[in-house]
Image 1 (cartoon, helix red, strand yellow):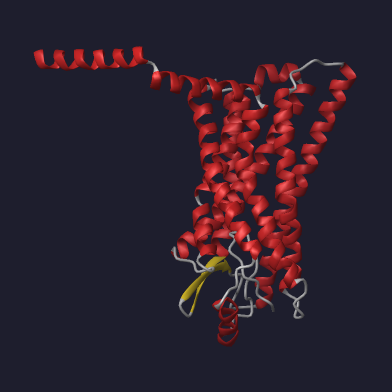
Image 2 (cartoon, rainbow, N blue to C red):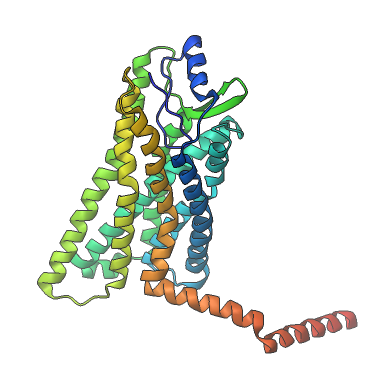
Length: 353
């Protein structure tokens, strides 16, 4: 079995036939990893995703919590931002791991958590996008019912259900993620090895890839495409007039999600097939393709906030109003004098008392 050097929390490559001799061979593959130009490109992308993702999603979270009315749409976008923010917050672990020639420095528990958070982000994001599409479809088909029952409280309950489901589906990546010590370095990888039988490990390896593809990609996108097709048909048939801004934001988020994640799912199947071949099938293609497709997946978490700001009118208006307010308070001499005057007054009163 060929082993492919990988730094990603998503990788499924694992030495299933890990006897002591094979373990030594496995470690030897990683003893002197040669960083390809694609790996350096990935490091740049990971770093950009971290900086833009934490700042961008942090701003969206701040705006939706403190500056915007808690509507159903705001609850959807807030939770999308939370999922992306949590993921980008862990990106420095992967950056350091790859920059350090795939030497994992953070222990077994953080290896597991890093992978689990990545997949919680994947599942939560796609489930939220699916819920948004169903919500908008219901608003068009059943406007009277939605007017009476479509409340922020109901949206919050659905969001809680989404997070619970995403957490449960991500548990296998916590269970099977493991570290192996090879000479003077450690590797963080997916360990599907079972002492009882190698076939059990192969089953779980294939099951996680197939389940992820259908549950986190195929089924949600069939629902999403169906919902928006129904919406487009009803709007055209009834000549309905509605604001296109929220519609454009959601369509842009969905298209971005598809372009960022579809290549990763394709390479996951290629990687799965190559793992159990003895002839090094697609070894070089995967060695170059996996870092690239994983980079695209990482970038999805930092693109969404910019879609909200530059396409969504509500986010755009609140963002610039907040920025303007901050600068006005910082540079307005009158407000500075008032603050100093109020502080002096309170200090004098405290001294008198």
